[in-house]
Image (tube, rainbow, N blue to C red; front, side, top):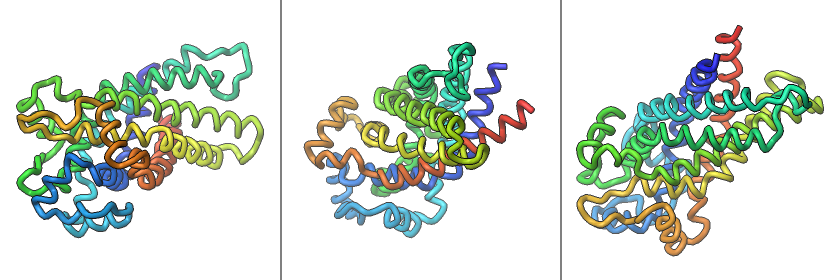
Length: 305
């Protein structure tokens, strides 16, 4: 039944999202380092993190010291909701499209699909999932970034429900899709690089007997998918994070959109600014992909027998 792909993908993604949430929070904090629009307010408040960018370990340590160890799980409720909406949609739709487009008459590896069909299915699934999950994604970014703001500027959401309610109350329902353009673009890239690559590597490894089938094949395919997803998505992820986190407070927004944010970031901080947070991104994507796909394989066995 078609619903199985959605349920399996959602459950596996929630497990992976919870397990790697601290790395995602560190990534978000690093992507906001050096942001020009944020610097004056932080400097005025005497914020300690303005002066120089820090590495992932330092950022994580600073968060734990300044806000408590539990702060590494700030926004975890939004992460779980995001995975339930975004990942269940993208992974379920991807499996559905693979099934619909599968060509039983030709040898295309274990998945029965050529690479371009896998990529196309992943692009469609990723974009659709991002639209569904954008409100939770927006809440997650703001909750993860809140601790870096001066105390008097923090949003202090008590949970994902409170975040969504307050955003709607303050800015209207459509504000829940702030940053949707870079979110959709990122989701399409990540899903294509992650799901299509996982299937492609798994097909190649299985076909050529490169490693023993089973767990070893799944780990190799997961690692490859995680690294490629990180490289492909990091620049658009930086833009997405900054657009979602911007504060307007009745004035002109610091960015007119994703392209404006990318241009301002490049001008002010240089090209490598688009790869801020790459180390925690790739450090997260590897374990995330491994936990995701290993959990998915086990959940499939339980549900499908």
